[in-house]
Image (cartoon, rainbow, N blue to C red; front, side, top):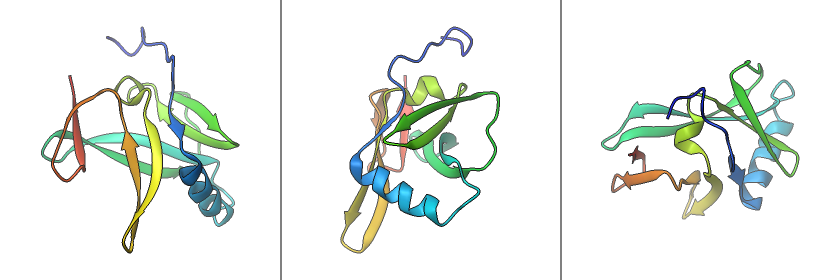
Length: 117
């Protein structure tokens, strides 16, 4: 599948917990327009999820809005994360984003990286 022929059908979504967290963080960042989900080659399985605050929108961005929160994904990365649900979970004293990606065919034991067929 090439990037040019890809048409998003699902996009990227967030749970209410993730939306609340991102909204709180955006209130502290007046220049941020939303959050970017992207992937990097990393980890034992091949790819790692990364997020960052979006101040500049690029022409390559697809934007998905969930309850007023904008999620930016580059068209290059969208085929690998399309359908992903972003959650924000607390385990003990740690809080983090958790990604539920239907395209992931394998994940490493610690959940930090994933593989796409």
